[in-house]
Structures are given as C-alpha cells and as structure tokens.
Length: 308
Image (cartoon, rainbow, N blue to C red; front, side, top):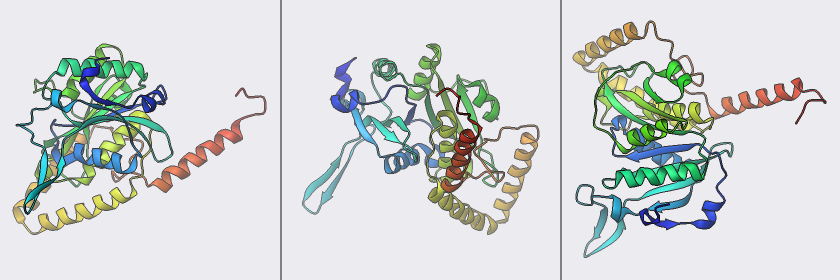
C-alpha cells in the first residue's frame, strides 16, 4: 500500500471492516448537472452513520489554487478553516447493511498512484461491486422519468436501464479511470450517467438524487430511506411547473421536449423494478413491507429438512 498517499489511517477501524462490501464512489469534479454528486455525498453522510476508515493526503493530490479551501473572516480574525477532504468511510443503510463510501474531491495530481491505491483497497476489502454516478445536461423534460446511460460490467443493469448508448470521446475523470481499470481486471463495477433536464442543470435537483440512489440500490442491494427526499422532489417539481406555466415559450419548449422524449422512449423498456409507474421511488415503509413479505414467504416455503 502506498501509505504516503494517506494522511490518516485508522488501523483498528480498518481491521474491523467486513469483507465483500459494496463500494460507492462520490467524487466531486466530474460533470455534475443537478448537483447530484454533492447531494449524494451529503445524503450518505447524514443518513449512513458513516465512520472514517482512512483519509488521503490532500497536499499530494489537490491543486489549492484551482480549488481553494474556505476560511471565514470574523470582524478582525480568521476562523473556521475548512480544508477539503478525500476519505474512505464505512457506513450502513436503512436496515443496517454495511457499505464503503469513497467521497470528497477528485484528485488533481498523481492519478495513477491514486488509482493503484484504490485497487489495493478493493483487493484488501474484497469489494463486491463498485458503483458511481454523475449527471449530464440533456434536452429532456422534467415531467418524464429521469433516465441514464449505464456503463461497466453489469450487463443486466445495462440492458434494463441504459437508454442512451453513444460512442464518443470525452474528457476523462478519475471515476472514469477507476471504472476502466476495474473493468479491465474483471471486477464488478457499474456507473450511472444521469440525463438531467438541461434547464435544471444549475439547480440542486432532488429527482437526480432519487435516480442516483435508485441506481446505487439496484447495483448493490442496499436500501436507503428516501421518503423525505421524495417530498422535496415533489415540491421542487411543483415550483418548476408553476414557473414554466407563467411563460408561453417555456410551455412550448416543454411540450417539444416531451414529444421528442416520448418518441424516443416508445420502444424502450428501461424501467427500474424499484421505480413506480410515475417514476417515483417506493417509500421506506413500502420497502420494509415488501421485505417482510418476502422473508415470511421464504419461511413458509421452507421445510424442516431444508439445509441451513
């Protein structure tokens, strides 16, 4: 392990990490229409009971003059210096299932060394699947379910979810490179590029976070409580609807986007099993009830002679 890349390693916590966990990657710096990466990072830190396992050395990886840390000036002195951080943490979903989270800034320097360190960590923790997400602005309407381009090794998710499959050259991100290296090594990895309405790309778009969590849950089997987020998304959509209704040109634009979207999606069948017909995610209570029914059915179907 290239320990010089780490500024802090919590050996006791690291030794207690279970093997075979999924790894979620949320690194700022890639295309982030709708603020999906920042929202995902905040959501997981607020709800995932995360505990830091190690911290990368910011001085070796960050260009401070391109992304300056924040410091507060209080009348006559400086307070609350907030350096940016890049960490690996252990968290748990709504039902206590553990996962790993790599979050923080995208490194400016030493990409190869950083990726090599990540690959060693994937091997050390025997990561079951690595998943990441970002979002790009597209001419799609907010009145339709948010879709994605899916990449990686999970053919089931690519076939079920990927509605736009371009062949193109684009500026690489560290997450792109990480997926590329994992795929080449035969590791399980899946990326979701969400297609966000271009006219909402500069807003924190709650539906983008819902779609990101839906993809992560489908790739990892984790379950997160999205009930409050669903309420925020509904309120946000109502605000957008009200603003568009005030402008005739906006109404025409929306109708045109809807017609193009519907024509394109006519032969598509990419709908997540976790998503309702209206494109929304089920509530936490609905997920829990479904899980209880499944477990009860398994108990009923099991005979006393079944192997444990």
